[in-house]
Length: 412
Image (cartoon, rainbow, N blue to C red):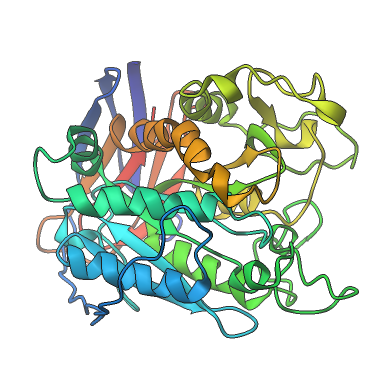
């Protein structure tokens, strides 16, 4: 809450043709819209829609669903509510498994297609599951969330909490980034490069510390890594937040994951204050995580269910550092259970524990904050625009080049 200011600049080459500083008051759990008009033209674009339809019934609920069942599930969700729930295949794994996402929205312009991004005018959030194949809890819990979202989307009154979330923005669910690893019950993907262990996809992204040409590709990226990069690029400035779901602890991990020393030491992002605030919304919704200061070898390392990555153990080539710096996405990691692959009989317990948090995180990103809408009336060419958050630590600078009305979102 409080007053926030942003500066909007529009450019031609290196010359600034104009700029405007605008301010707005943000109240808790409310999104404030700031509009700035730039004298350039708006141009409409056509969207192609995927033609997907399957009729398989859902598998038994409290089990680990296979990759085939995952594909059947996303088609079933689309069939159940085709106007508001759409399946999208972002690519293939190393072994040729499909990598499926499901988008849930009440806005017709919020659904990505092969060559057309969603509108930037409403914010969106992405859950990513199954980065490590032998940590499937997040993948499975996302199925249960998808069932609820698709049952309520566009049907006012079925679930007021979901009504509110989807009135604020769009939800993207990527169930399994690493379907090969899930099939093989291992951490890495299906590419055997190190004693049959596969490639760890959370070490496979260009790293800002280890790779001097960041964010350019290193040439060692796996197909799953490239698919996620392309997908997040496609989502564009509509995507303001994301988290990937893991197992092995119970803690919210915020960037940066890496540091220069290679030893356990703090290396917070410039937006550490904002990311901690957003992450706290997830953690505080469940006492089990909120009271966790670390167990076993991690004893004392967590602060009430939260830790900054490099202050736990530094790693390089991870998702959250890459997408925070390259795409200005406020990206986090959630370790959901101490056991990497819990027994299926415990799935009801884990869903009960994490369900409130998963929805609370959506509300934190989609149901509050500041939206800067830059309008382009008819009559001028494409312009380069720079939007800068003037409140320190509360949002990254965003640059875009466009000839259509464009939105930038800050979940403050």
